[in-house]
Structure formats: C-alpha cells, structure tokens
Length: 266
Image (cartoon, rainbow, N blue to C red; front, side, top):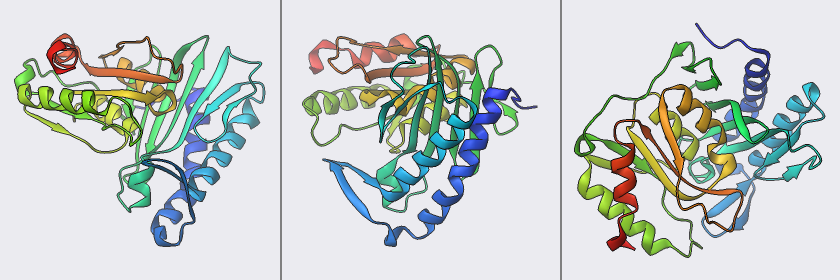
C-alpha cells in the first residue's frame, strides 16, 4: 500500500526527475563548481539545478501557488494561502563531501498548515511521504514512531550550530545535558532525514535550534502522520523562517523538552 493522491504523485514525480541529475553530480563530486554562501554553509551548481527542476515541475501543475525555497527565497508572494516549501538538497555539506546522507524535501502548505510532504534520499532510494489524515509511508510501507518509553533508553539525533550562530555555547551545553540523560546522541547532517528517521522509528527524538523552515516542513507532516509529536519552543525568534524544533515519539517528548530547557545550562 502507498499514498496515491494527485498531490503526492506530483511531488514524488518532481523529486524523481530532479534526483537523476543529482545522482550524477554526486558521482562526480570532485568536479562540482562550488561557491561559498556563508560560514559553514555552501551552495553548489547541483543545488540550483535541482531547485530549478523542482520548481518547473510543480509550477506546471499549479502556476498560481506560492513557493518558499532555500535558494530563490519567496516566489509569487501574492499567494500565501497555497505554498510549496522546498529544500533542493538538505544536507549540502554531506553532499559536497561525498557523504550519502542528504535529501530533497518538499512540503505543501495550505493556510499556514503543512498538509502533505515528501522527503527523498536518492542514494538510498528511500521515499518518505505523508498526507494529512492518510498516514505516513516509507516507499510502500506504513511507518510509525518508536514506542520507547524511558528517556534513558532513547537514541536522539540533533544538528549542531552553524558557524555564525550567536548561541553556539548554549547549543553545546544542551547537547552535553541531553547526552548525560539518554542512551546516545547522533548528528547526521540532514534535518529532513533526521525527522524522517524519527517518524520511522530509527531514532526516538530530534531537536535543533535555528533550523530553517524549508529543512523541516515536509518532516512535520510525516512525523505527525507517523503518530509522533512536534513542537516549537522559544518562538520569540526574530526570524520567521527559523524554528527551534523538538520532534519525538509521544512518550519522551515532555522529558526531552525539560532537558533542553533546563535553566542551569544557559
């Protein structure tokens, strides 16, 4: 069984088409032309080419929809009711260094709520998808979060701060505190896949500060439909497209939130 709605079919078709050139680029990583985008964050010609293909495919079906994407920003600002939220390569640093842990991520937002999403790792050929009310799937199989109940047994994943982050020390202190109270903490370098892995039970929880909306938009609906719990903490951020996310199975959510927000680590 798999999701077979027009919206999901459109997104998966766009991902598959864009992934062909992405796989070729990954195989010739040493020949890619790379331009620096900011401290700790780079963009490649593959990033831009992938985005162009995705936008073209989605606009064929819905030229009136708005688009929020990492490389081009906001397209068609007049439509804020229906929007595609796109990250052409989530895990760019992994991609650039030949690490096969990256994904295409597309979420569909309607009136401020993510209604469907797809995360595709083209190297592993793993397609995570979900639609509100219809469940979450990995390829053709239904997925659900883990049932781990004790925080001390939990396997947690996170993302480290970017080089320019002003709260780097706070994030490192959170990492230390969480590490002392769980089974182990991992860092894989792709927020989209981190959330997807929580959704299918490979990890029990994920948190990250200052994460971009396009990195996690698709993951939000996938995790929710996999019966997981997603919250955003300390939302007094000055960056509307930046989030502080906590995504877990429902059993450990509040306890992990307590470890992250512990006052004596600030």
